[in-house]
Length: 279
Image (cartoon, rainbow, N blue to C red; front, side, top):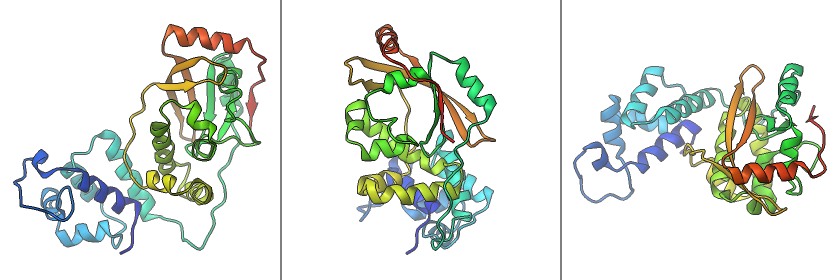
């Protein structure tokens, strides 16, 4: 049986739903948990054979109406519906396995860099969905200094989370952050770029990365909790501005409480770097 991101997501969601939660009758003991394919097909108004083809990757281009019906049948929320549509696009245009796509662009527009400068000395970065830190403020350098996150010519949060032992000490909720970074690879700058980075990371990140990548669970993004090596515990809100034409994001981190605000101010008095852009 072949597999596609779309089929994996539908099957994962189906397995996670208890029939009783949808008002369906109990049909006796089952070999596998979750919603039967028969029941999902009936709720979506499609044949079991067609749903099987989608789940097994033998039909890679279902219509928008079918996707909408499946989303309704699975009672997906807004984030999950967006993910379903995105995976449908990936599945319909997946890269051939015999080609190795080129890495994504890493240049940042001057106007975006100027916006970042206006946020100084705040905590902000420009990144893409692959986790590349393309530019950052001195405030971001202050709160991540000594953690290893910004080591290397092209810092990458996703690679850091899965391959650097220091990440588990820095992120108080490492499991949640790992889920978020893996999930965001599905929203990469392009199918080609995401495939390139995933192939590169899989060889060094191990099976835990692959497991999280293929879970297709839309993560909840709460307060970011950091354990800074200098001592202070930080709690930060994240505000994200999408830059769709650049396939990038501007992320601003704001202290979530007075204790964090004081700790950030202390960290800013440490030796600071300058705004940096990676090109």
